[in-house]
Length: 442
Image: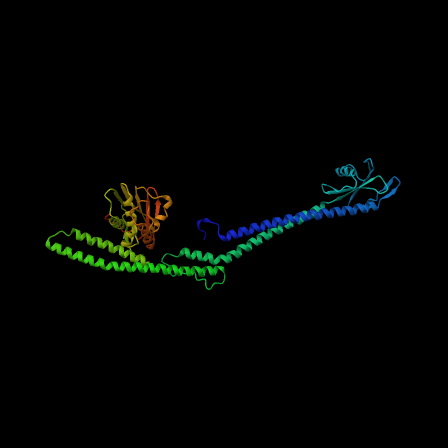
């Protein structure tokens, strides 16, 4: 689970470990290369000094004649040069011979490295001649490069092993967190008794689970307290509503007997029935009830919601009928989810409000559009928070939050589809298709 596409904590830990280990391996390889370079150079110089000493010990000086014993040189190449630079003994004709002649001009200097050779010149004791000894160092260089390569390969293996071990250990350590995230994502607002249940705290992860379970206990207690209060208030309102309806009906019967008009009394009865439906919806919301076997034509829902919202005289209301489209939500609940959105459009519309329904996947989406000033895009999320109102709004800021809550209770949702001009979408679970022949009253 990786919402928003962000890199997971496990990936960041693994990447950081890999980067640090790689830097360490690179640094180690550099140190090894530096040390090997110094060690190999020292060994080569020491070997050249030994060869030079051996060759010098084998020289025979007889006056101006110097005899060179080349067998003492072993794997080295040896030259004798006269004081004027002329070659007395040794190979000639190659680039190495020319380099030896150049080195012979400065006897006693530090050894000279030339390609895969190390050359040393020194004066011959008892003679003016100069001895030059050249030692091949290709083997030393090969050893240095091989050692550096092996060090780099070992570094790569170590980086891969450490990265793999880190990935495995972090996956194993964070597995409970991943499971907790998936469980929490699958919970609904009505799952007040769900807990992570990782058992007694054994480490930081299980301690976190225990703390979150405690937090969920307190949140569930607060929600249940709110539900009880809402249920109690709704229940208390039902009794006076029943009395009002009964008295209005009795008054209407008496007025009918006297031949008087009952229009206002009938309006009171209708308003009480509407308010009773609101109370019923509030009770369902407070109890977290969901009715999934209801089958109501969406046109009836739209008609009831428009009637509850009281269409304004200054704006035209256009309703696009959707024959045969059914929602799996009771009429009272569906209309209470839709009516606050419609009332909001009526409140801000300048001249026109359009309500239309369509089936999208497993839901029926009812769009409500108006030609008013719209919603500030920066406040698009705030309008669904209880008590939040726009500048100059005459409402209490409770309609849209209640609509979303009722819709989500029914398995749907309410969202702002477009801020300007405003277009809201109320999604409700889709029901079975009505057989041909159904005629809506919308």
